[in-house]
Amino acid sequence: MFETRDQPAAVSSKESSSSNESLSVFDMLKIGVGPSSSHTLGPWRAVQRWLGELADTLADVGGLAAVDHVEVHLFGSLALTGQGHATDQAIALALLGHEPETVDVDAISTLVHDLAASKELSSLAGVPAVVSFDMASDIVFHIDERLAGHANGMTCRATVADRDFESSYYSVGGGFVVGEDEVPGAAGFIALPHPSQTPDELAAHCTARSSSIAEVVWTNEQAWRSEGEIRDGLRAIWTVMREGVYRGCHTDGILPGGLDVRRRAGPLSRRLLTVDGECADAATPEEWVELIRGREFRFAEVLQWVSTFAMAVNEENADLGRVVTAPTNGAAGVIPAVLLYHVCFSAEPVTEEQIIDFLLVAGEVGTLFKKGATISAAMGGCQAEVGVSSAMAAAALAEALGGTVAQALMAAEIAMEHHLGMTCDPVGGLVQVPCIERNTMGAVKAINAAELAMASNPVDARVSLTAVIRTLRETAEDMSDRYKETSQGGLAVNVSVRIPEC
View (cartoon, rainbow, N blue to C red):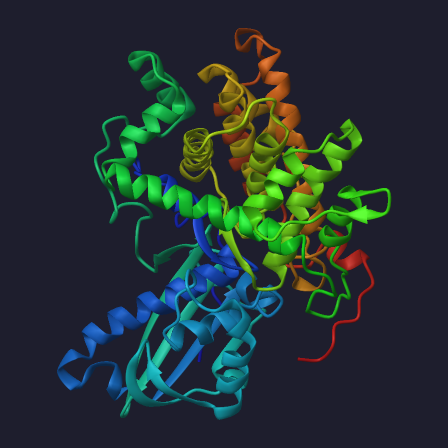
């Protein structure tokens, strides 16, 4: 079977960036399904990649149609919190040939239930086949073992006649997947007109061009896509963000998983929209945003709206809803909450171009953390997820408010500085407690960081974004694995819960 591997350093070579990594905004902002980018989207992509590689390997014997049996083995954090993060369901959906961007989220439970009952796949990634696959025994959780390259390791195995074919992959955060012997970023390298591995390099490009961050990033993005494709892609991201908030604010009930966490975004939004006993509402997300924008709210109510926006997204995420990984699913509520705060409560209407610029800045700042540290809670705790997301949102808001490049980077630094050391301790292995509320805190910190930066002279700052990114990496290396998405420390062991038998 599988031998126990030596445990690697906290941030391994699989997490280290190549010396000149190129990352798109669309690498940091991905449309997918909750509840976790590293435990749901990553394994989903890993299985899809494995099936593609397996089809090539088996081309001479009939391709995927020749497969008799499939197993997937999960290690480290994927094993410890995989069921709570729906890793098994993501694997099933990938084997069935579904895409995270387009799968009918309302049908997921039925699709998974039917596969579990049949114990057989009638196709692999859309290729007709008869494949033995029992979800109860062929998805194996090795809770006491860890692969050498990363905390989120998995091995996929196919049996063809009397031969086994297996490959290992690592889900390194944000839906990124690397193979066992790969250098992250090397295969997808593209020469950009304004490459930035560090905040200082990004600032230098902006200074040389007398441009904003958004303008520099827009130019870089054209190395991958046409202007129309960039615009359409960012529109789609904004649409999913806005719709996620709307759905979350119009859905009540108890979240799945056994913690009995009650959804709060719906009741909060209705209370905020109730005047003289009458609750106003709108039929579409667009009209709902305009409804909020047209009302007058006290400061405390605006603060509650920010929290409501963030909770709405993360409640959807916890219920396998469609969200935008930003930069991870566990932190998916921060950027939509801050962007909606800007759209709903700015004095002047926010245009589509300004929304696109906001997303460009947020995405680019996320790439700096990915290159210089980590965006994986399994490697760095929640500082690497909600902390990074808060920094992304803070920079974007600062530039949206008219801040300079230096002020935007200062905003990112302030937001991240005050998340340093934050652990990832999901109670019951679910992205509910403390994850949902933690997104509200990240959003509020981002807004405050942007406002502080706008009121400051960055020349006087004693801490740089470069120093904070380096500190994030060093803190991740020093942090005990108990606090890295394993549910073996923190609130996860100090909150009494009763999880039903699977």
